[in-house]
Length: 232
Image 1 (tube, rainbow, N blue to C red):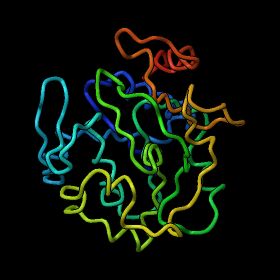
Image 2: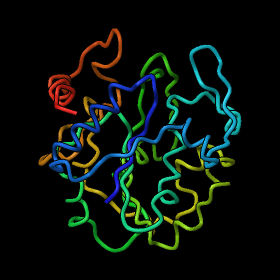
Image 3: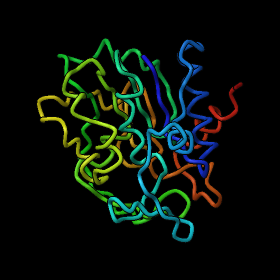
């Protein structure tokens, strides 16, 4: 399994902590790969036009503000990986269990596996004064296990990732409902949004955390700080 972590320079500390927690639970057997948009642009994999408006990025294709710089780069994962299983996670996560355990839990051979959250956030802002936008299947794409060998994922192309709207991409427009499998809720627990599940696998600090200046505090801060203190 390859593991990709969304990267935004404004949340560098969060991405580093996610990577450290992954290395701990896998005994260093998985080296996480950071999805840095600047590198993807340089490699010709990304040409999606983005404008800078104040402190916020504006996605010209979607005609909307975008809260993270990996909002759409995550959909490059099946093309970067080509075969086998690949996991994408947002940077604001802490791994508590080896994600390879997912492979023993999933049923069938679907193209994609996610935790199918059902909630509508009342938050209007997130991270460093970035706009929070609600859309169908919100947070499904924050932890995604791709079956890169599944032919349905061949419907997703570089052109799609660069020219489709974010709403279309995050609704998994290229897949039928039957091609989207289910992960146990323990693999994408939304901290301080949902009750904590048993045998927690991934804690997703979607409301923010100690890496943000002026953070108001949350119930999982101590665990995040412990992960941040792990050796590189």
